[in-house]
Length: 473
Image (cartoon, rainbow, N blue to C red):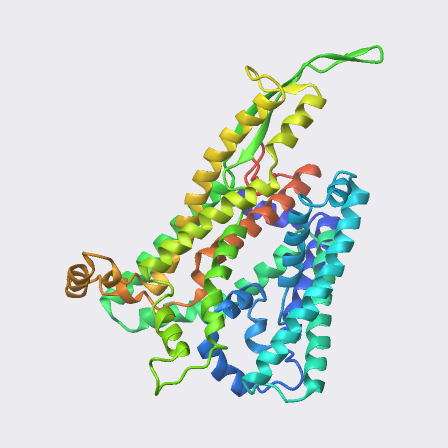
């Protein structure tokens, strides 16, 4: 701990690093200040009543990445979601359009051009999403009627997203980096002391023995999950690479031995976000399907009945959720890591894997390693996403085929297991997606600060000779 506190003191000893940290904190303060400014024409009381019905839909996922701004329809209601969506779309489009692929390979100039396209696409997505949000507010009597409210909402929320995008870029360039990620991080963390922690103290103050044991078990599981996430996110599979000697002018260069690190979880939190978004679509669509309570045979009533039990905690929901995570993990990693391109680049630069012929054989070898690592990474994401969700929403053992009824009776009669069907009743702040984002961004930020300290001959957080590798290292 002494080394850690010494590193914290050194952070504010270095003038340049101190300026970057203070600038980052200032930008985050501006971001949180804007979260308290509600968009014009919004009825807050009606919005609170509506949110109690739609909090578990796709809007809840959007609210997570907006830092709770969407729940209050502040000027930053959309958060950085349009920017992230635009970045993912352009990343996927590089595999389809050769022009974008060439830009990606042109270095810094190409990267700036792609960033410019990302900004343009972000504005287009903002206009489309804000129009839907304005119509949704009008349909739920949260906003005023007429085209004036729609235009005002579109202009306000789009401008807010553009300003957030600018804040993130300023933090990346003039702050400690990871601007967009830090904004998401701040949005999630800000809810812990105001909404997450009070729930825990309420359980402890109740005096219930089982509630106290539940809190202790929850804290122990969260600490274990965080340690497990840190361990997996820093894990690498090192593929040995050798470079043949070659003549460059009159000099003989090459002959080096190095390795190519491949992460176990290359997809990060993106597959979980995709899976959560897809599963939230049915609940979102239900908000727009009319239901006649007097006619149970109508199409709307039957659709509502079908999806009424399809939510977190339902065994069929959890199976579908896990399957989607695995599917999107393989899909996303296939897009971002092209084994044939990597093998071709190794061959062009005189590199090869010892014992493997360059070219196609190297690509097949890397593909085998990538498939195994992706399988482990997908199972890791499933584990991290499902464990907190089961703790929050419970697990409806009564819906299990064959053994459901008997197992439900056993759980209900056994002391200390009554929380399993209904969950512990905590908010979404302790979810697996939140943990992945919080731990990942914290690791990247600490890694960058430590690199700045080491570069200036200061000891890092873990002393000399030790480095915390972020997700991008």
